[in-house]
Image (cartoon, rainbow, N blue to C red; front, side, top):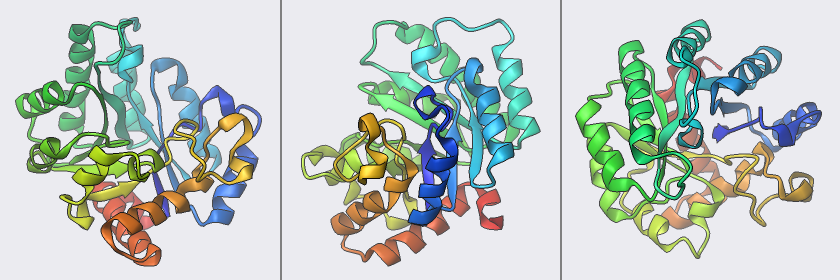
Length: 261
């Protein structure tokens, strides 16, 4: 199993990463894409990837942290991407926050989209309450031959076709496959299995699907990924085993280096 999106550099994992990785291994999770969110945590992501073969590093500026950045942030990001041959992320737009203006979020997002396109790297897009604008910016900045995915997809049916047309994938967390997530589950029925990914978004998006070992202070972990995959399988009418194989193939198609794992 491949966890398409997590943040093991988060302070909530401080001092506990070896146990987290061990539980993930025991659960059958063999790769975890660890996404940086700002310059301050990129070195931690890089260190984790050097220490644990299961961790695949990604580097980007999350919209929450786009407000105050050092002048050399884009050059620094490029250097990390080149050094580790990494994907770009987590990047995107968030209409639910008022701490960073939409204009500033969009400017930082565009810089990173151009970087992903220039380097031929896939990217992970965050989107909350900004779907129309996200799609508009992607159309203006594309095409993206290396592809991208929207993480923790929570958009409605209307977002599916435009994202597919832009060479996008859709990653679902446990929150997106629970019965209450009506919009996301309706959208899921429109997406071909070949365009799906599964993630935990650890340490966030804790749900009761997490095992007791994962639930310390309601902290999510990659070890909860089998529950996400089982939820996806239920919604689209597949067995968990078939879903697992399909998701591995999908992740390897978007991140070719995973095919070598």
